[in-house]
Structure formats: C-alpha cells, structure tokens
Image 1 (cartoon, rainbow, N blue to C red):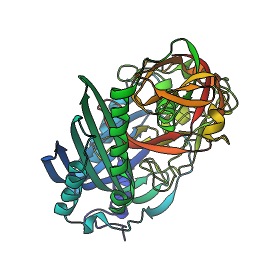
Image 2 (cartoon, rainbow, N blue to C red):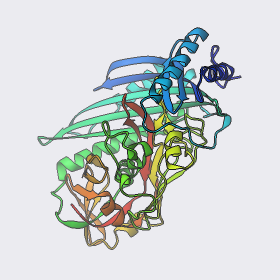
Image 3 (tube, one colour):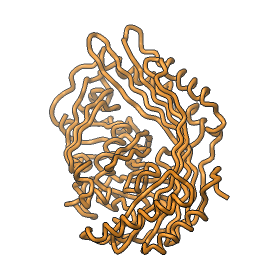
Image 4 (cartoon, helix red, strand yellow):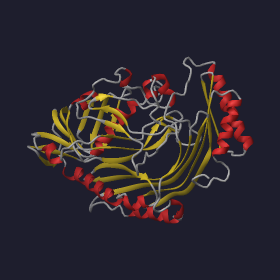
Length: 478
C-alpha cells in the first residue's frame, strides 16, 4: 500500500516500467512518480491578487544506454502512455551515447528500500482553501508600519504535499510524503523622502501548524522596526579595514552562496557554466585550506522540520550530513550518482528534482556554518571599532563564487566592545578565502532561514534552509 492516495500508480507499476526499459536495452533504468498538490495565495497591500489550488503529477524516466543518459516524462498515467515515455528515455539515451565524450555511469551509493513521511499535526488537506486564504489575508493586513511611515506589503503563501515513489533497476525503492509550508513577504517603506525594501522567507516541513508557530507577525514587526531605524537614525558607516560581526542571517546567505554553490560537483565539472557560473573548487581541491580552524560548513537534508528535508534523494540514495568545509579545510563535494562515479566516490545523496518534468541534478538542502561556543557579548567585547551587520539588503557574487559583496540593512557601529548608533548601508566586500580565513570566533546561537534556490536549465527552484551563528571577522574592508 502506498503512503498517500494514488489509485493509479504504485511501486509495482514502476518496477514493471524499469524492467521494460531493461528489455529495450537500458543498462540502468529509473522511474519516479512525483506528485505535488497544494494551495497558494498572493496579496498586495492587503488585496487578494490570486488564490488557487494546484495539482501536478506524473512520472519521470531516466535510462543509460552505452554511456548515454536519456530523460523523459509524462503526466498521462495509463500504461500505454507510460511505456511510450519510457521508450523515449531509452531512445534518447541511445542517441546520446553516440555524442558524449565521457560515458555516463551511475556510481555507488547507499541505496534504500524505505517508506517515510513527515507527520502533520494539522494536515494541510483538512484545512479548507478559504481558511488558508483567510489566514494569509490576516497576515498581510496585520502588517502595520510605524506611525508616519508609508509602506506597502506583498505576501505570497504556498503549501504543498510532495509524494514520490522512486524505483531503479539496481535496487532503490523509496516512497516519501513530505508536506511543506512556505511564506514570502516584501516590505517597501518610505520615510523622510527615502525608500528601503526588505524581503524575507519563512518555511518548514510539516502541516498547517507551521503557519501558527513560524512567528511571521513578529518577523514583519521586527523588519518594520529595522527599516524605520535605518531611515530615521542611521549614520554613514566608517570606512577601511575593521572588525565585523555578522548576524546568523548574513552568515547563512554567505555559506549558501560561497560554500554551498561552489561545492556542487556538476558546477565544478563545468556543467553550470552557461547558466550559473563556475566554481573556485575547480582549482582548489579537497584538502585546500580556505579558512581558519573555526570554520565548518555543513549541508544536511535530514534536519527535522527543515524546508529542505529529505531522508533519501531522487536517485534513492540515503541522505546524511555533508561537510563542505571542515575546520577551515575544503572537504567533500555535493554529488549525485553520475558525478560520484567521475570522482571515484560514493554519492552523498544530493540529487533533487523540482517536479516530474525535471531531471534530478546536484542541489543543496540545508546549508549552515556549525556553531561555536561564544556568546554575542563575548564576540564584541574586545572590538574597539567595528560594525555589526544583523540583516542584509542585497548581495553580489562572481561566477567563480570567489569575489563577493554584501550590503547591510540593519547594522550598528561597535565601539569599545558595545553596540552604538545604527549605520546606513555598510558594504562588506571580500573574497571567499579572505572571509573564511579572517573568522576568529563563532557564536553558539545557530539559526536557520528559508529560501527557494534556483539552478539549472530549464531552471529548477527547490526549497532550502541556510543559516549559522553570529561570527566575528577580523580586519576586513567596509
């Protein structure tokens, strides 16, 4: 019996289809049933712009023939249509085999036979669409700015239940049901003739209880205060080389952009060059020291309640924490089975697909800097002159993920070990190595933030968390 209602497709159907591809000549075959049902609503300045349920389901096929990899998918779930799509995948693989310079192999990994689901305390399916829409409307309308401030707010609410069944010809058979809730808002504020914007994302895996426990009202209120502080009281930041304290939100963004993306093995192999760039890890191998001993960066899909949660990836490999940087030294890359075979290692379960129409590619899940043992007070107590950047406003990073620039939103001067007046738009510009090598203390207050990470061509957006603690960076340019 499947974990969720699926009257047409179950594992036995997928097993039959992978066997069929084998009879057509596939050395490796794979079938993935992938269903996403949900609801979304968008509000602008308190007015409902769009609200609708969604339902997407189909089966994706992959085949390897003589070193060529083929992909196809279909939303038609009758057996004739499924066999036709499976046949197309085998034909595509056979055609690709005549063109590829490097033969594709599905490398080893800890393949699973498993069924699992995330428990919903308040199942999304039990909440009427109108109640979900009303809840999102209440959040949007309750976002009141401080007195005298002009503001507009846009808010996007989305929930979904993702049901997958994955079968491969070499033994994987994994079924999962993962419900998720995601909320995005954008605040546009004007005060004293100046404008600032703030966007923020929240989310996790679970049921409708996430909406009640996620703290969105307090997050919006706090962001209004941040914007008002910047526009009403902030002074220009000091210039030059200073000590900088980075908040968990900023640290999370930094490790996602400058440790997570450059550790994707397909990017290191050059396959993302035309869409998303390259990686400094093309030239800096495993074992290269990029930072101080205080820096450890981990990507972990198995964190309960996380937006990027899964226990098995979309190739059936069992997930585990992946150390991208360990005590300042570059460690493992993120791999799917194909890139793992090229590097002669086991897959570490980084293959993810956005939906049934998408092939699994190398992706992050929940990327964070491991916490240390410092309190915030200890991080700033011996800083004579510096800047504390609590929240970011914008960022830029080059194609190699090496040179990067972050602009603070809420930030404060640090004088003689104490927080002082707020500063406006501090710009923090470093290389990845300069940043990680200059970290001399890491806080113990690990926090996570949500996002939808884009990658690939055609583009795929997948839910992730990123985070970290407060960190102290010595002598970098502001």
